[in-house]
Length: 440
Image (cartoon, rainbow, N blue to C red):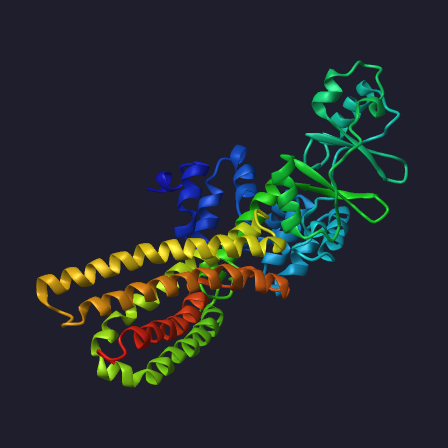
C-alpha cells in the first residue's frame, strides 16, 4: 500500500482531479508529480491555486516556488493570498524581483501596467544581427517573458522598433538591427484598460505588446498568455452579471457563504421589488380580469415571451459591445434592426398563439363564444410585447454604457422584470380595445 501511495502522478491526471481535491490532498498529490514536469504543472495553475499551494507548503519550500514565477505572475499570486500572508510571500522573492513586484502593484489590476511583465528581450539599434543573437541568447538564460520579439531601445530606454527572432536569423551576419527592425510598433500606455489590450491582440494577432510611458520609454510587455487569462476572467464576470448577480472575485468554492449571499441577495431583492410592480399592474386591471377570467390564463404566456425576447436582445448587444462589433454611435442602426426583428418574432409567436387558441376552442370549446377575439387579443399583444421586449433589451446596454456603467449590468432577469410590467399594460390595453362590448 505504501508503494502505491508513492507512485508518481501524471500532471494531466492531477489537473483533471484538481477541482475535487481538498487543499491537503492537492499538496500531497503535487509532491508526487515528477520533478521534470512539476514546474510546468505549477505554472499552468491559476493564481488562486498557486497561492493556496504555496501557503500549504513548509516555509522552506515556499521560496523555490515563489522565485519560479515571473514578476507579473508573482503579483497575481500575492494579491490572491489572504492579506495577512502577502508580506511573507513578498519576502520570499529576491530583492530585484520584489522591487519589480512592488512597482507592478501600484497599477490597477485592469490596466496594462498591472498586466505587464517588466522582463523582456532588448537589443541596441547599432548591433549587428550576430551580436543581437548572441545577446539574446544571454538574456534567455535570465528570466525573460518571451523571445518571440526583441525590442530595440536607445540608451534612455525609448522604444525605437521591434525585430523578431526570425528576422535576426534571416539577416546577414553584419546587418545592423536598425536596418531590419520594424518601426511601426503596436504599443499601449501603462493605464490602458485591459479591454483595449484584448482588442489589440485580437486585431493584430501578436504574441506580445510593449507597454510604454508618456515619453515612449518601454516599461514591459503584456503577453498573449496573460490576455487569455484576462479574457476568461472578463467573460466569467460578464456571464455572472448577465445572470443577475454581482460578479464573484474568486472561484466558487473560495467565496464564503456570507459573501455569496451578499452578492446574490442584492439583485434578487431589486428584482423582487420590480416584480411587485407586476402585482400592482394586475391589481389595476382587476376589474377586467374579473369580467373576463379567460384573460388571466394567458398572462404567463405574454410576460414570459416579452421577457425572453428582451433577454435575447440584451445578451446579443452586451456581447457585441464587449467585442466592439457594435459601438455607441450604432444605437440607431441597432434600434431599427431590433424593431424589425421584434415585429417579425412577435408575428411568429402571435400566429402560433392564435392557432393554438382556435384549435383548443375547436377541440375542447375552452374559451367560449368569443374565442376568436380572445385569440386576436393574445396574438396582437404578443406582437407588441415581443417588439417592446426586444427594443428595450437592446437599448438598455447602450444607455448604461453612455452613463459610464458596465453594459453587463443590464442582466437578463432585470430586463425580463422590466418587460413583465410593461407587457401586462400592453396586454390589457389591447384587450380593452378589442373586447369592449363583448367580454369587457
